[in-house]
Length: 183
Image 1 (cartoon, rainbow, N blue to C red):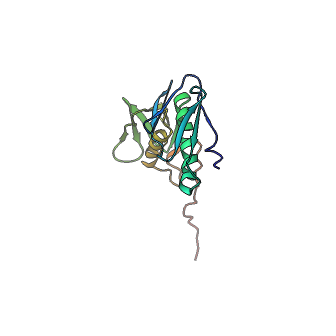
Image 2 (image 1 turned 90 degrees about the horizontal axis):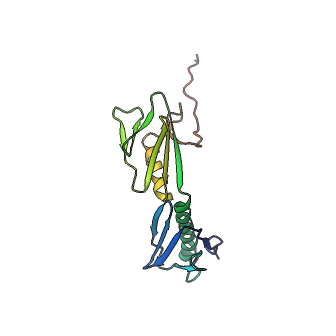
Image 3 (image 1 turned 120 degrees about the horizontal axis):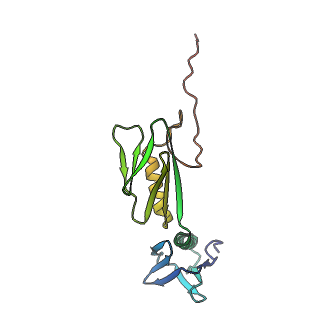
């Protein structure tokens, strides 16, 4: 039995959960999220809407994999509408910076033109200082995806470490060419 899948998902106070029509709808103070689990998985609400349980029909390999996945995704939705998710990006390099233009993030990272990126719906971006970008939202997948897209515009390079990186990311540095007098 899946250790993760068999654990119940606790629904905190202030969060509404609806299960029906092959969809799970979670609504809380930070927003509304919707998820359509695989048709083989059954999601039930117990204890007057306080606990969600995910069950599977049999022990086939696919169903075992989907069991834990479905439970984790629902738990992430509940966490997202209560606490929300946040990713922090740091920009390193001389003249490299970020700015906010209305809702769009504008990156100046060594290219001839500035890169302008709009966050998806339900995701907000903040720029507390020119070298930090904070991405917040209720949907863990959208927050992570937008952060990855921003980072991909100028990945940190291994020689000087210039580029966009996650806040706690460790960039492996390489030694450059060494010019020694040799024969």
